[in-house]
Length: 83
Image 1: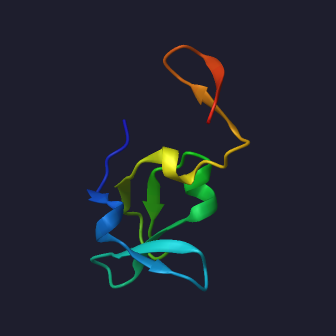
Image 2: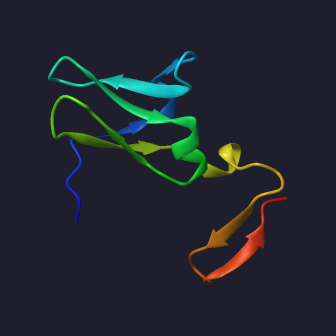
């Protein structure tokens, strides 16, 4: 099991348009980051590049899925349409 430093709501993170990523301050002085592309892939872990801490980002994955993309329903193990 992964030990998270914290669980943070996406709404509490800042968005950086230059890097298309969300960030949240890390206690080491750097920033936890997660990109839009990672979130579209279902990633929920933001990492700090300067230390070993990670946070879990809480967000609604449905708002980051492209209309034509299929999503795997992990409860049933089959592909479902994202429409």
